Length: 213
Image (cartoon, rainbow, N blue to C red):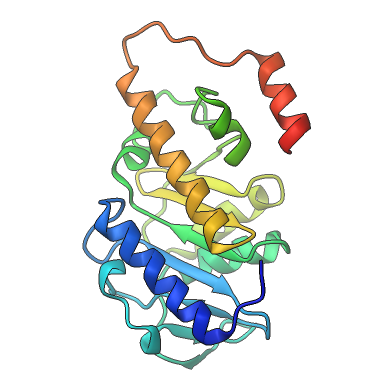
């Protein structure tokens, strides 16, 4: 992640939150964002805060162990962010949304739990890769963290059953770009239900993975 001052990181989180909210990718006080700080620890959106109305001064500032240093109390789903950071040393930011189409897919009964969405587009393969489904647990339940933990080493994006996506990226831009690609692919997947679909072939998918990782 490019070096950011803490002040710039606070502004970037709030700008991203407003963009996500204003485009209808999250609603009410749902969804949360965090960013890893160069000096250690994280900034995280507070509990019960609308992403559309974030105050830079009130973001939760946490130390490396997750203890609150300043600001409002962090989101109750902060443990999801910590699990992603612990499993992915390259992660600079994490975004979790309750975006409509991704949540809808997370409620479907017959998806592949090891790879929920098919390779509809090249950009989905490049930005998400494989998307595992995490079993349902109530929001705030620590068993959810333990269900996510073994997946994080191989996947930077997971879909929580009946809940929504969590995506880590090397930067805020990378994390938000990936989760928006996931949401758009979920929308396409639902639109294409009942139609004959031409997915990318395994050879095409392998070519993309060899070029873009």
